[in-house]
Image (cartoon, rainbow, N blue to C red):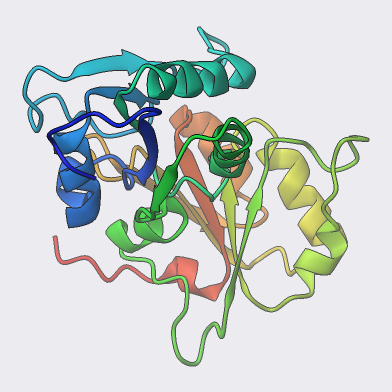
Length: 249
């Protein structure tokens, strides 16, 4: 991507912005932002206003229980601005392809004949636990990790997840968007055979000055979350690694 002459149509670059701190942007992501003529951003994306000069920034985020731009309209905006010959960046928190609907945006732009570039980002599924001193894998404790969405509760007809199978994986479980249904999720994991005393932790507002960590067990973490008033954005980690605290304070 260049900063000079327009091409017709323009282009769209899908940039994963990392877990929220602008310092955790990739160099490629920063260069794309500085070359952009318009940035369509999400509410969990880092604030990049101080990194670009006179670039139009439009918030099209989906705030839980708040204002939200329908995905179909976001797709339309990407195509409209690119067809006007503009260099468009779609900026998301984390990585665009980890529950970021980046695939849908890519397909919509591609079907419209818009050139699309992908710049991966640091996913919060790994970064948030790491910033809290929790490695998602650790020799002797976990040989893998599984990332799932808790947006839909176990037992909901819309749920495609086999929670009993997840309970048997012997991997670290990382739950995104799981605050609302955490009690039901932990109950399903216990019923699936995961011991109730398995360590668990919730990382809230990772990569920000307000980051907080709540630690407990699979049996207690949902209750602790209620007591502490945990709200999104939060990530839950379940597994032996959740007992670790590798951060020097």
